[in-house]
Length: 210
Length: 93
Image (cartoon, rainbow over all chains, first blue to last red; front, top):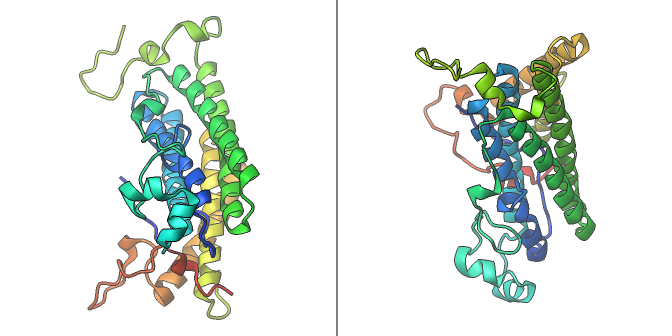
C-alpha cells in the first residue's frame, strides 16, 4: 500500500502563469513517455518478477514515478491557475479548456488521451527491463525537448530534477538487468523467459512451469 | 540532531525534502548494491536527519503524514495548503 506525504519530492512554486508551457509539459503527465505510463509500467510489471531484488527495485522506482506525476500535475496546475478567457483563447489553451476547464487530465501535448498501450507488461523480466531502460531514455529526451523550449527558472528547475532522475533510473535498471543475467545461463539470455525458468513461487500450490 | 532554534516551516521542509531525496536516491542504489557500506551508512545518517526534522515539523506546523497526526479535538490533516498549490510555498524567504 501507499501512504501520502504532504510535500512534493521537489518543490514546485511557479509565479507566472503560462498556458502554452502547460500544454507542452502535460505530455509528461499523460503522454507516451510520461510519468503516468512510467509508474503504471513498473508497478504492473513487478508481479511477474521472480527475483525479489528486482521486483523491489521496480516497486521503488514505480513509487517515485507517482511522486513525479504529482510534480508534473502541480506544474501544469500552477501554470494555468486563474487564467482569463482572453489568455485562454490567445494561447491556444481553449481546445483543452473546453473539455477540462482548469482540471488536470492525462493526455499528450497533441491531445491524445493516456492509454495503457503506451507501456507493456510482458511477463518476461528481460523483455520488461529492456522496455524500462528505453522508457527512461525516451522520458529524458522529452525533458530535453521541454528544456529547449522553456526558460522560466521556476519551471526549468523541477524539470531538470526530473530529467536527472531518468538517468539514474536507467542506470539502476541496467544494473538490475545484469543481476538477472548473472543468474542465468550466459549462453542463451535472449531465447528464454526467465520467469518460466524459475517458475512462480508465490502461490503455495503453484507447480511452476516445468 | 537537536534543532538549535525554532526553524521556519520552509527551512524544516527543505531539510525534510533534501534528506528524503537523499534516501530516495540511496534506496535505489542499495537495491542493486546491497552490501555497500558507504551507502548503508549514508542512508542511516539521512534517516536520522529526516526523522528529527519531521518530528519538529509535525509538532510546529502539522503532519506530513496522516499516520502521525497528533491527538487533538479538531481534524487538521486535510486543511490546505496542499503541496500542489502555489500557496504551499508562498512566503518562502
